[in-house]
Every structure is written in structure tokens, then in C-alpha cells.
Amino acid sequence: MRKIVQLICLIIFIFSLIFIVKAFNSNAFAKENNKDMRAVWLTTVYNSDFPSVSNRGNAEAQKSELIEKLDKLKDTGINTVIFQVRPKADALYKSDINPWSDVLTGTQGLEPNYDPLAFIIEECHKRGMEVHAWLNPYRVTTSGTDVSVLSSNHPARLHPEWLIEHKSALYYNPDLTAVKEHIRDTVAEIVRKYNVDGIHFDDYFYPSNYPLPEGETLDGVVANARRENVNEMVKMVYDTIKSINPNVSFGISPMGIWKNNVSDPTGSATKGQEAYYTVFSDVRSWIQSGIIDYVVPQIYWETGHPSADYETLVSWWNNEVKYSNVKLYIGQALYKDVVSAQIDEQLKINEKYDNVQGSFFFSAKDIFENRQGCVDKIKSYYNTVSTPVIDEIPVIEEDKKEEDNSNNNIVSEEPEYIKPTEIRTVKSLPTQDEVLVDDMVILFESYNIDGYNYFKLRDIATALNGSGSQFSIGWNSKKSSINIELGEGYDAVGNELTLGDGKSKTATTSTDKLYINNTYTYLDTYKIEGNNFYKLRDLGEAIGFDVDWDDSGVIIIKSR
Image: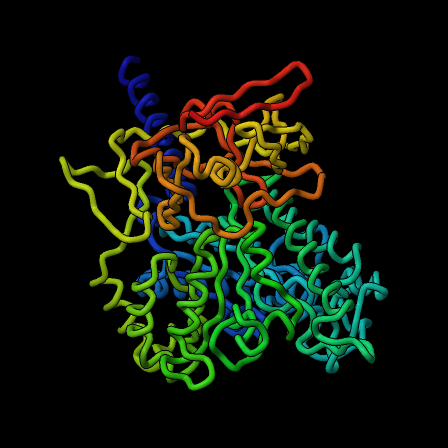
């Protein structure tokens, strides 16, 4: 009897162990993935990368094909797959909003007998790879304007009033609130139902060079309204993702040129199509307002290109994200022979720029075909380059501090990193309290969360600059770390002490690390539209200034 009981216990133990290992493999992507971004776009429109046309309608063949391709990508050094799940306002996942994509079976709306998104998530996570669900937000057809050919449950067929036509194709109209809400709801469904690591939009917004009304200019009222429509959609999507799961990243891959410097002195020294005017997308505003987590400019040119030199653009984008919390990855064009042939050189160029944190390669097909030996070059580069690992605990060497000229280096004298006990997403209420800083009235953008007033760090630095409590702020984008140096003057970045719009905002617990004089310090922090907000009293105690209130409710800040 005892032997039977022991056998039963052993069986239970083995099954429990199997369950734990399986859970670990599917969800803990492993320390292996805490590296620089090495992503590839896996394109499904036109059955470009997946699934092969010959495998349409064959679920098992598609699974086998995907496994083979993921193994190839893994062997190349790829750690993230950008999987196109919405090529034409349809779905490569089980949706209650959008119909099944025709790339799976040849017929839009037809059940493929498996869930491609769920399958690729499981297989990628087994391999220590991330999955970002890639959506084209507006495209309905690549050609043709007859809605009757769409699936009977296609939202575009049910709502033809949502559509615009351009160059014999259909698009959702970005002007419409209903369209923005439809895109938001589409993203929300994916984030709620699937264990994705990110949501990704590509470079298509308004149709390319969509005409303006007669008499309107590219900087006129209608053009500006179009850019604001896109901004509203992007912010709506960002806020929705963070309200469901703050750990899911939201990134966009815009055209490689924001503006040429002939259009705007702050643009790049290039002569190509400009995202700002061609598709009415203002990437700069998304970065500055913090409504994306990462940006992947499609720098699809070679080094030395006469109109759009690769390094010229990498340098421009590196500066563009410099004072933001937005991560920068570079989109690189393996589909071009000239780029594939020099891809290792381009990767070495990326190394030179502090804010470049990895690459996205387009497309997977060119890796599978090893165009111009690009796979050999990428593998060789990744096998030899020293890849930075983003550790939660700073590594400290006795009596040694690295030095650089950008205040980006952070070494902690206290190695313990305290994670926030809970990642929260809450509503913050704008406050209108009067603030006196050394007897001078200063207006701040501040918010009330759980009864406490939260202020933007850079605003406090500006207000105290030149006083006995002044401090500088350094930002290390690779480590998502802030370093405050007490007693040093603050260098403004350009958006300090700007007031908000007086509306409530979504606030999410910030996981950025804070160091004061290179010593790790934990303070309760919330991120609002990309900026870190701290409790005023906490900042006073940590930095060295006094905070008080008078009987009328005026906040009083006194430097020391």
C-alpha cells in the first residue's frame, strides 16, 4: 500500500513539474530576451512572408511552416517577431470585431481551424522571443473599391460611411470619431485576449499624398486637422493599452524622414518624402507627448545615399528622442540589395549612437533567402558584438566609476533596486493650487493622485535653478534611468513649465529608476504622457527644499 501511495505522489510531482516548466517556457521569456532589440517584420499581406500560398487552408501545414521560419529567425539572432495580424482591416486571430483574413484560406471571413496569433505567441515564447502584434490601422483593400467583395461581417461593409477612396483602394477615414474608436477597440481586444508583448503600427496613416481641398496648403487648416486626427487616434490607443496592461509596449514605425531641413530648419539634411506632409503624421509630437513607447523610423537607404544618407538620419533620430522616454530602434531594408550587402556596416553605425537600442529588419523573406549574404553578416555581427543586458540590479565595481560626457552613466552605491509593489493605471486630476517658489508665483502642470500632489521633475528643476537647492537631470535611455546631481545647474530641454490642457490624464506607475548623486533612490512615481511626476514632499526631502502650505491653500516651496 505504501508503495502505491509513493508512486501516486511521484506521478503528481512529475506532472506538477511539467506544468511549471511549461508555464515558465511560455511566459518567462528568459533573461535571454533582456537584450537590445533584434526584430523582424513578418509580413502577411499578399502572403509575402507567411503563410505560403500553397499552404492556404491547411492549418497543420501553416503551423509547420511557421515553426520552421521561427527556427531560422532564432538562429539568425532575432529576438522579436513583429507579426502582421491586421493586413487589410481583418484578422489573423479570433476576433469578434474583424473578419478572418483571406491570406489564411483564400476567403475572407473563413475560419482557418487554428488561431495564428495564439500559436505564434506560444512558439516564440518557447524560444525566448517576443511577439508584437502589427496592425495597419486604416487600410481596407490594397486594390478595388467594391465593398460587396468583402466578408459579410466586415465593418467596412457594414459601415460604408467610414470609407474613403484613393488610387482605386479603400481606407477607413481618419477624420471620423467612429473610426478612431474602431481602431481603439480592435487593439483593446488583442491586448485583453492575447499575451502579446507589444502593439505595433506601420507607416500608413492618411493615404499617401491624399489630396487637400482646393486652396488648402500642406501647413494649412485641413492639413493640421488631419495630423491632429492621427494624434488623437494614437493617444487613444496608447491610453487604452496602458489601462489594460501597462507592460504591453506600443510602437510605431514611421517613414524615415519627418521633415527635410528645407521645409523646417530642425528637420534632417535630406531630400526625400516627408511623413509630416505625405501621410499627415507628426512623429515628433508623439515622442514629445510620450504617447508611444518606441519609434522605428524606416531608414531604408544605404550609407552615402545622395538624398537620404543612412547615418545622417540615424544621427537625426538619435537626437530627436534624446530627452524623451521613447525608445529608438532603426528600421533597416534587407529587401534592397545595396542595404543587405552593407547591413553589418549599418549595424556598426548604430553602435555609435547612445539612444539607438536595436534594429527592425524588413523583411523576413529576405532573411529566409539570405539576400546578399545578409544572414551571415547579421549572425557574425551579433556573435561578436558586446550586447548590453538591461539588468535590474546595477553592477558595481569597487572604487570604479565609468565616465562619459553626457551624464548618461549611472553607477549606484546602493545595488538594491526596489520594484514598485504594484503597477497601477489610474486617473489623475489636474490641480490648480497656487505655488510660491522663494516668494515668486510660478504656474505648474500638476495632478492629484490618491490625495497627493504630483509635479513634473523637470519643472521643479527649472523653478529651483540658480538657488541653493538647484539640481541637474541626466537621462540614460538604455537603462531607463534618471540621475540627479545636487548643486549643479539645470539645462533646459525646451518644454519646461508648460501648462496642461486642464483635463484628467491617465497615470501609470513609472518603472524608471532614479539616482541622486549616483545613489539609487526609490520614490513613488507616475508617468503621465511620457513625463515622470513625483510627490512634491518626496522631492523636497530627497533633493533638499522645504514644502509647506499656508491657511489659504497656497503651496510654498523654499530653497535651502
